[in-house]
Length: 476
Ligand SMILES: Nc1ncnc2c1ncn2[C@@H]1O[C@H](COP(=O)(O)OP(=O)(O)O)[C@@H](O)[C@H]1O
Ligand SMILES: [Mg+2]
Image (cartoon, rainbow, N blue to C red; front, side, top):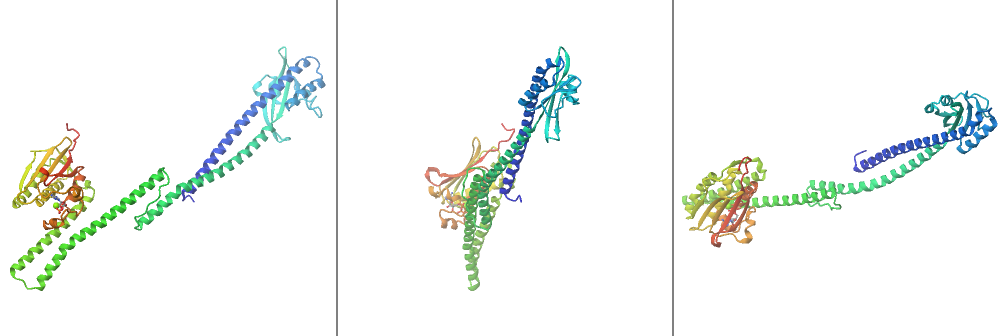
């Protein structure tokens, strides 16, 4: 029953309204009753006092019951009540009701007894009258002359008016409550539809996305939380679509990259099997096979590196370390390669550097890939220089060569997976097109930046990497 927001809202509204209306009604009715009661009491006491003042002198002599009853009747008519006058032994001396009045009888009412004893706070009462079917208020006031109690005035009046008023108000409140519930129901439905409409669109879109259709977008119709949710959903959907596109592209590219060496291998192996070969030829074929296999292995290794880097960098334990020894070690590995290609190789490293948060084998990979590229894309006789400097907040690694350089328009793209400026040259050098993608990923994971500048004297290129310095708590 409570499974939709609409019912929940409507039921909540309903409960809220009923609670508010009922408690407000009870409060209002009670207030009115008290007010009316106090008013009536005051009026009756006032009437009793008027009668008291009128009849007090008459009680000092032998009382004339007709005269006294006349006085009582006069005031009673105005105050819509019954008024009786008794002497100090509660014998009735006057009654505003003339026919079948109580004159001559003893009126044994506790209110009168209390009044005669001058106990003002007890000389009134509220009782239910069987005959009229209403509540009746009774008040008695003593008659006094020269410090002597001569008798009492007894006033009684029905509270019928308040009962009627209460009933009227109750009816009105009921009507108002019904009207309010109706209005709330309509507003609630309208509001609920406004809220649940976009949610339903979102849930439908999500369902379609789960089934593989990533093109889902939901129109944003408001600027509230739901509008924000919708916008975030659309952004997420777009991001997901883009990621999926990139992933497909990556798989396609990777497969394509593998196909070339695999095709070569296929041809080489078939030829070896189908044609009788001289021993030198055999050697040549085996060399070729070896080369293609190595290219494949490198490719797969690079792909594995990338997938590992895709996982959160935090999975690798970063240590606070001086990277200089790691860089020095890596450069030593590359020295031979530079020498073979007759490239002048320099490094300008400080003896030690400020500590950084780093995964050392990844730093090694960065240096290796950048210097390896510099050597590969610089012709014999060229020069490669590696410099490490300390800036205020970071370490700066610069790998400079005076080789073929990278034209401005390629400088962003070379960091993309499989992107090469010159495909043939890269292939001939045994490149996979993944080196810079790996480097960029690592640098990002370290919170650093990488960019390409012109090489010295406008020739070749300079790769600049920054890694933020670790700010140790106690360091100063
Ligand atoms: N030092 C450099 N000088 C000139 N071109 C470079 C240099 N480094 C990288 N490149 C270009 O960027 C491309 C991508 O580099 P990389 O990702 O390392 O792939 P690979 O070296 O396997 O081709 C290279 O193919 C090359 O065109
Ligand atoms: Mg490379």
